[in-house]
Image 1 (cartoon, one colour):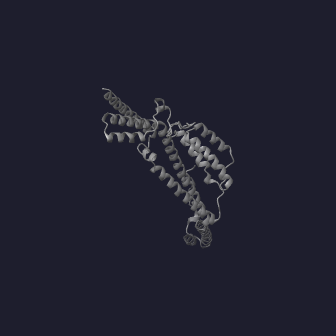
Image 2 (image 1 turned 90 degrees about the vertical axis):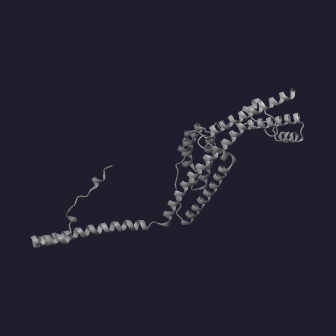
Image 3 (image 1 turned 90 degrees about the horizontal axis):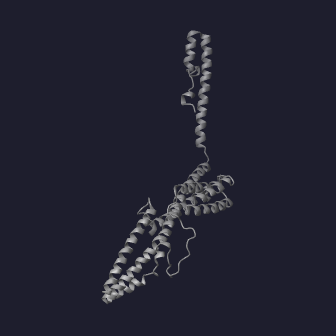
Length: 318
């Protein structure tokens, strides 16, 4: 693109003041001066009229914009803001849910083992001392214990509260936070196919079903599936943006967007205030590392309690 200097307009006689041109012409030759002055006046008047008309037309066009046009612009801005907010909330919800599931899967057996060891230690102390308070504490500790998991269950599974192994997740998440590529694919699909962009119920239903598949693929960090979904969407019908024209419809749309944002804000606050959300705040940049750190700490506690239990057992035999 050319620079601003390429569009400079050279100065011509039309920029000369018509009155000065007339006076200068009269001094040299009365008839020639009169004709030159007349031509200069016509040119100057024509230019001034054109410039004034252009400026007035521009101001009039800006002031004459319909209220519906301004409302439509506000609706589009609110829609995009809501979509970005919904993407952020859904991304956080996936991380909280994955953290909770992995926490239960990896650490649940270790917590159960700790409870069982606490009960065994309390029972050993009570058997040794015969003290009423020690016996009471032993009963209380035993009442809190789930069925004791075996060694294989400490790392490979978990017993339920009724002692029955629950149905295993056929496709557990590989990690709390999906990788960068999965995040990029998810955001692009969510922005392109979000149901809130639909202008009729049929299109909204199609988008909602598609986004549900996108969310499921993202929850399992399935990059291959996300790529297939991106190709499927690209091959589908083109997006049609039909902006409402009635002011009442636009106002209703803005109200719905505001209500939806408030709902999402409540969901986000509940996620953040949950036990898992509070735990994730301890390591917002590396939640997977936090799980591993907790697991290491629990294993150390298990080892310490097992050593304590063995000490009590040996003392009772001596």
